[in-house]
Length: 311
Ligand SMILES: [Fe+2]
Image (cartoon, rainbow, N blue to C red; front, top):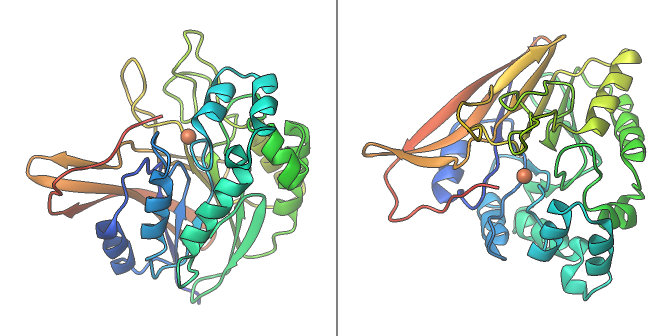
């Protein structure tokens, strides 16, 4: 009888990850650590420092880039303005602005010396161990969320993805190719379809009219896979920070039709409570086809200073 699988999910890091996290996560004996992305903050280079720390993990780690990873600030502005013209213009600039070069540097920093941490996207990985086998699918990298394909020049050049429809088709292919006992999806932003109010798991809290800010391509792929008989055990993501603008918090997890959805984006993930410094992640246990999630706040000695921030 296989033992339950135990996975750690680290939400949007935004520079808040260090050697204390490496020790705490390795001590837990997880089968894998899943990073939903946004390692970087707003300062160029911060993501690489985080990646070098992640590379120190002895536990296998998988990272999907967020909309802050491998991205030049000017590119981020073009996406915020939803300007395809500006995005194309910047993409024709020097190699420095090309996301693939920046993401290659991030992947190299994650590999470190041991190669235990892997940067992926539109990719499938098999987790083996004393637990039942798990297929892990990494969804669309650098998702900004909502009904628009963000960072299109990069996706087109690297993956041949030109629309949300082609992204959904690619993700569907990946899901249907899975045949392990369990299937877990790691995405930067969660799927559409989980609510259109500001406090919903991936709801829009930055516009007055609210709305569903989940990824439509991921929703379509999950629906297509289910229609073909594939059971999805868990979908883990972040991006939409737990604290909702205007007050309130999003749910950290929710089960719908046998699939566990997790939003791990507690930002900042490292914070102080009284004299204690707490470091957040989400623990997922998968046993006999069922996944459960719980928040973990590891207590460490207060550091002299903490990097954090949102976005
Ligand atoms: Fe993000």
